[in-house]
Length: 468
Image (cartoon, rainbow, N blue to C red; front, side, top):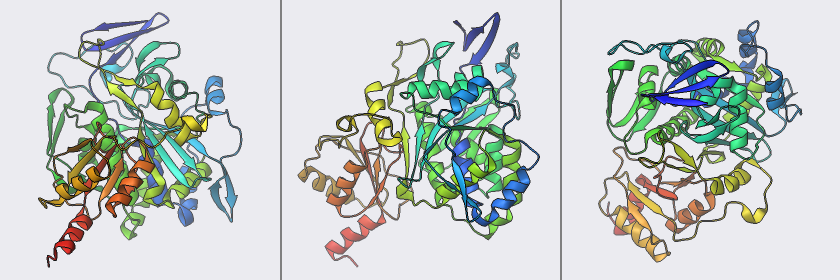
């Protein structure tokens, strides 16, 4: 049973009322960052990881019978040792949850006096899961797929009714969160989970030496109640832990929580491409300390090493990042704002990327030439978009739109398959004669494919004109 008052939603469990605030909080890349960090220290350093975790269980409490059933649907081993190193033996689905807890969210809490800031509860993993990712590690296809699930997704939470999916962890921990995600996505089996808190995210960013990203526009925001002050300029820059939190917490007016998901995916890409070096190796003790102190997972050390080693060996083209299909609720449609899921799109997506049973004819098919294509320049060359537009129109792509240019040039043109359709993006790349296909949800939400023109396109156009 639920009841809404002011800016909060109250849920009744038995005779106890639980309070969930509607205040926007950050969707971090908790679990994905965990695996990327482990991937950077895998291989010959695996023994060091095992030693660090010795004596401290990775799972913070014993699993319940219900949790054992949820995460034990496939009893086959995940990892096996080969020449002393663990390797994946089968496809694995891991649910990763980024949690943050405010003192005002705790059971029995009373609202603070007006003007008083909300306090974060360090180390607590039982709050709202403001990031949700379902990862598929597939050694047969040599591929990793990350499905971002917006925290505002309107779903049925078993035992609690309809609500936002980020409440599942608050009510029933990782087990209920996994059950909710599984049922929402067509009963996909979930093998393991990982939870990481807000403080662990910032510490992990500092431990790996920061991450370099391109901030597409100035990000400015002020919230005195949470002591949240965001002020990041546009352009390429290296973010430490504090700035990375600002980058992830910023909420723009147009895309809301989904805009945060896009930044989450951009940061994951940047981390994946950040090369292991002597400086990173020297930070190994701190990286492992952060992981040890901030995670809760039912993965064993060997399983973590197998997943990390597998992810580390993949090229960019073998890592897909998707967004759970849906739309924003309209003003007045519901008392709260939601991401409303599109079941007819979810089923083929899960069949194509998560191997759920489905007739081959129903799997994701190529979007016809009438699909939406967005064009974005990063080269500051005035004629670049005109040339691309002409090529695509001649090929039958009529639904074209132009986006604001990015402030930092890309060395290589990117053709972003926003909805996971690699085939359509590849057709456009072949038509242009250059570019890299990227499957991720960082493109324009209104389009099926986003083309970001890079320096390679500018150089080719110069060559055609005979420009020195």
